[in-house]
Image 1 (cartoon, rainbow over the protein chains, first blue to last red):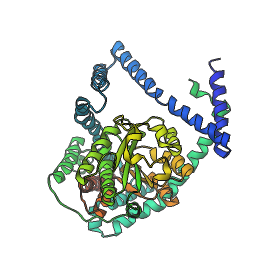
Image 2 (image 1 turned 135 degrees about the horizontal axis):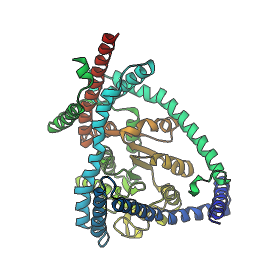
Image 3 (image 1 turned 180 degrees about the horizontal axis):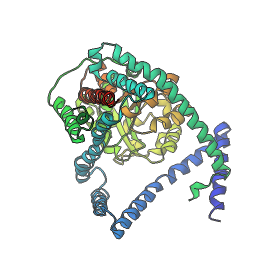
Image 4 (image 1 turned 135 degrees about the vertical axis):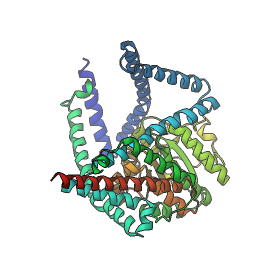
Length: 204
Length: 272
C-alpha cells in the first residue's frame, strides 16, 4: 500500500498534467489551474521538511559526538535566536533586521567570497598547458577573462570584448544548446519512466 | 627557483588576492567600459517603454551573491523611476532575498523620490516557484494577496490596474540560480511575458542560447553588466566599483596562470 498509493497518484497527476498542457478546452484549463493551486498549497510544507531534517541531522551529530559536533550547537543557537527575533513581530522588526543585515548577510557573503581565494590558488596549480585540450581551455579562459574586464578594453580596445563576445556567442552557445537538448531529452525519458512507475527510486 | 615557484605556499596567493581586492576599493578611479550588446538591448527595451508602464523584478539571489546582482537592481530601478515606470518586486527562489530587495528598493526610492505603493511595491516571497509563476499569469492577487508587510494588495494604489502579466511590460529576473529557466518555461512560453535576466558571472554562459532565440530581451552579466548599465544611465555606482575591483583580481589570476605555466615548462625542459 505504501508503494501503490504514491505510484497511482504519480501516474494520475502525470497523465492529467500532460493532457491539460496540450488541451485548450475550458475544463482542461480549469483542471490545470486547480492542480497548480494545489501545488502552491503543498509547496510551503517543504520548509517543515527542511527544518525537521536540519534538526534531526544536527541533533544526531550532537548525540554521537561526531567530529566538530560543537558547530551543531551553533546551528541550534542561530536558529533559535532568529526564530525568537522574527516570529513574534515579523521580519520588519528592527531586531530581526539588525541580525539579518549584520550577521547573516556578512557571514553568507564571506563564505561565498572565500571561493575567490580557492579559485586563484587552484588556477595557479591546475591550469597547466599539459595537453592540446588543456591549452585550448586555458587560452579560452584567458581571452574570456581579459574580455570581461574594462582593463581588457583599455589594453586592446574593442578586440578583447569582441573576442569574449564571439566565444560566448558561438562555441559556448553551441555547446550549451547541445547540453540543454541532451538534458531535456533525458528529463522527458526520466519523467515517462517515473509516470509509468518504472523508475521508483524517489519512493526511498 | 622554478621548483619553488611551482610549489608556492597557497597562503601567499591568498594574501595577493586579498591585496588586489582591498587596494582598488580604497581609491576612486574609472576605467573605460564598452557596453555589450545584451546590456544595450535591455536598456533600449526599458528606454522604449512609455511612462506609466510596469516592470516586475524577481529578486532571486541571496546574501552570498547580492554584491553582483544588487547593483543591477539599483541601476534598472533608477532608470525606471527616471522614466516614470512602475516597479513590482517579488522573490521566488530565496526567502532571504526579501530584506535585500526591501533594502535596495528603499535606497533607490529615497534617491529618486519614488513613493511606495504608487511607484513601486514589494510583494515578497511565495514558495513553489513554477506554480507561483503560473498562478500570477492568471491573477497576481490570487498568489500575492498582500505585500511583504501584510498590506492587502487591494489597498495598494499602483496594483489597482494590474491583474496579471498582461499589464506587465517586462520581467527582470535577477538570479544567482536556475530561476531564469523557470521564468522562460512558464512565464514566456505560456503567457508570452517579456523576460530579461541579470545573473551572476558564473551562470552568464548558460543564458546565451535564450538570448539568441529571443526568449530573453536582454542580459546583464555579473559586475560587468551592472557597470555597463550604470554607464548607460550615467550613474556610476557599486557595479562600476565592482568591475574595477574584479579587473585586478582577473589580472592577478591571469598573471598567476602565466607564471605557473612558465615554471611548468622550464621545469619540464630541465627534467628532459
